[in-house]
Image (tube, rainbow, N blue to C red):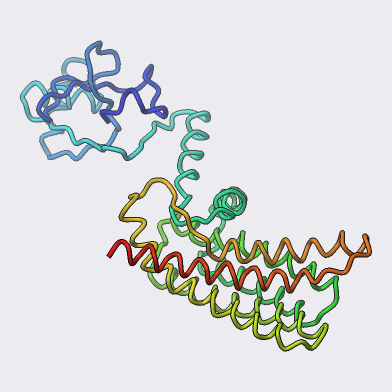
Length: 320
């Protein structure tokens, strides 16, 4: 690792130092004064390492580094730069906590929307920290999130202020849990094309159920057919949102690479709008004000989702 000055994970006092020139190791050891890299502890050795360690043992050094030193003196030890990948020696509890924090921080995605990045992801990562220690699978988490969303949608269909509020809470909870499936998949190295596809399919069914349920709730209050039309526009916008995301995300990831974030309004924002407008029903009930917040939620989603689709089309058009 040549990133000695920027590596805040390595402890220089205990790290094994390496002096490298023209990709060859000149010297390696914990106490050497002149060095330009850290040893990450990963070695690919040929059978020659055994005779090298045997020779080193004759001088009282039975360590792997001792064997590498013997090979280095003979010009037979090469270095491989890990570039921007990270590593850490986990020799004590503090280092373990540091490594855990670093790994969890990599679970964020460039495609995370504003709600996901600032609210959902911090919570879901904390959940995943404990879920990763269980036998739960990413696909099961996707299913749990979907079921919660369907229960929330069913409560919207049933009507009533209590059902509206509980449905909104369950909807936001499902959105947070929906982030855990990908996090667990990455932590356990269980990422599959089927898992990603299943999650996307369940999300589309969940989105449709939520918007249908909320539209029906609003329509049942007055019977105004305009509400059905706005609900239809919101559903179409949400579905096209997921469709336009494919090429838009591909383009943006090419432009910014694997680091950083880009502007994106998606499912996290839509569900948060439903959550906020349903929860705000509580203070309005006590204040005596009559405002059709569920309709405002549908109207906001209809406008925002379709505006985002148009924006993505413009961005893709400008980028050929």
